[in-house]
Length: 424
Image (cartoon, rainbow, N blue to C red; front, side):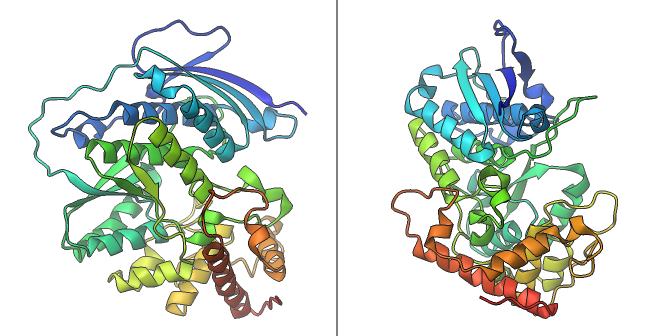
């Protein structure tokens, strides 16, 4: 089998010669890519060049990912993507940094990447604005889902400087994010600011690849850039251990066929890359050892109303765009959500478009429930943790196995609630 081949030449400033056979792309393809970014990073210090270059590289990777269709490959998945990216500090991206970047992209997408850098980028200038807002003290990703909302609610109760929530820009769900943040702000003694990063690709009359495995890297690189500008030592990426590890439910979902953007190995590669570039910001997952239900309890303890958890947060992997409901009700993230809310609240009042237990005649709507049910019938141990994805050297595996097993208990209770037994 041969992969589909694509080649791109990403520029930020200037007009260097485009390599023969490469499609020219630039950040203008990302709608509103720099809206508020310069203002948010207008600080009384030089903004680190390494962080700016990392963001540009992440943008280029995301655009190449979205513009390269998988179904053209013989296996309808694997692609060969050649990418040249314009950066400011070319020498920083050689040697170990180049190796780590290839490992990171191939881990996320299961494609073959050949990424090269070329000079010509220019550091974003200071705008000379009078600073009207205090510097940021803490940075975290915020999607508006249960996990990121719980973390924002927890950190909102801790006295300190401004908390910056970095979100994706999605017009259809933007109001939902703002409603969740508004609820959290109502009981917060500290100021919470929000920055929305762009994920929309301006490519009219062109089909885009739906899988987008590099979207998480785009968000994390944006948050890292903001943290570096404000001299914040770490970026929090809150994701419960069940979905961060995301063990494959079936052999067809191994490797990048399941999302791996917050997997410990992915974060370890990103952190090592940051260090190789000369940076010191660390990307951490504060919820790695928590189940979905335990995260929901954290949110309740942080004074987040139960009605906000069920009615405002968005966890669906495929949210319906033509219905009033925010959740399909039958995808794997929805099922994990239901198990977590049931564990924490004893019930789940989330309005779902479909009930995974009443769609027996809808094979597509029942596929994740059936795969999950079969997975729960099989024992889970340490070997299953590393079957298709390595873990960082020195990481204690026992707590990770334990969090998956506790999550399996929550999921088993969900099935029992619907009269479907699971024998382990």
